[in-house]
Image (cartoon, rainbow, N blue to C red; front, side):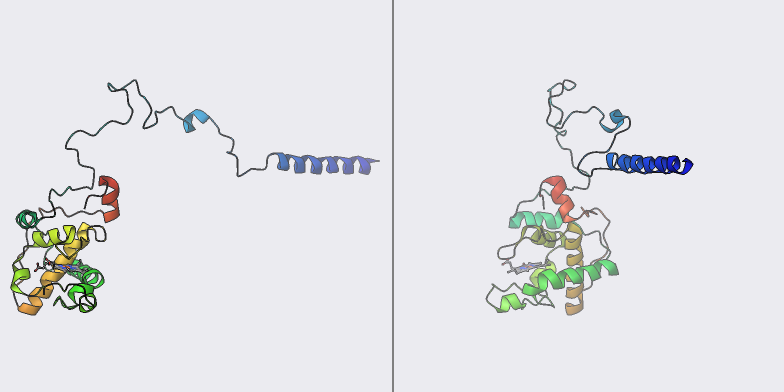
Amino acid sequence: MGRVVLNGFLLLAVVVSVTASWIFSSDPTRPNFEFIPQMVHSPRYNAFAPNPNFANGGTLQRPEPGTIARGSMPLHYAATPQDALRAGEDLKSSLDPGNVRARERGAFVFSNFCAVCHGAAGAGNGPVAQRGYPPPPSLLVEHALKMKDGQLFHVLTYGQNNMPSYASQLSRDDRWNAILYVRTMQATATSVPLPTPTAPSTPQLKTTQSDVAKISGGQP
Ligand code: HEC
């Protein structure tokens, strides 16, 4: 008799625990039980919701005029030869000519993005130029040697005649790295000494191009 009662209890316990586990099993399609839900859903305004706390009645406020987004460094140039010259005066590379990492990165950028037209050594005889694209001038001749770093930055950023802009493919850092490499190439090919290091007064960004595009709505 005692055994029957015990077995009855055990059966009941099994049924109860199976049922409980079925009832309380989590359903991934529904949110879990929330403890103190006020902490999860604190009151707040949606970005575009009306808001009585601000004078203009909106939640999202316009930035103050002249505000610059973090990590963003606006360039105030047009894609004109005049502005290329102005960029040559204004913008200086902050990279030390002896910076091996920057130069190696520049070499990588050059061989991936520039050599197709400019040729591996910058002579203007890359495969694309040999197959009908208007060949670029040699980067090893006087004209290119005399261009200032900032002017090269303008060419890479805004393009120049048949040369397209590389602003969307190359971060600013990589444009400066490529420029350093072009300078090294020129120095090696023509035995013109490398420019002396300049004070870091340049818009060298630690952001990637996609960050810049995100922050600034696609500024170069
Ligand atoms: C699609 C081919 C092409 C690619 C790729 C290209 N360039 Fe050019 N580049 C040209 C052409 C063509 C010119 C000549 C533009 C002109 O007529 O003013 C030029 C001009 C230049 C000049 C100015 C030279 C001068 O004497 O006026 C520089 C500097 C330069 N390119 C650097 C680069 C660098 C660095 C890269 C890689 C980031 C690059 N280019 C990628 C085609 C290209």
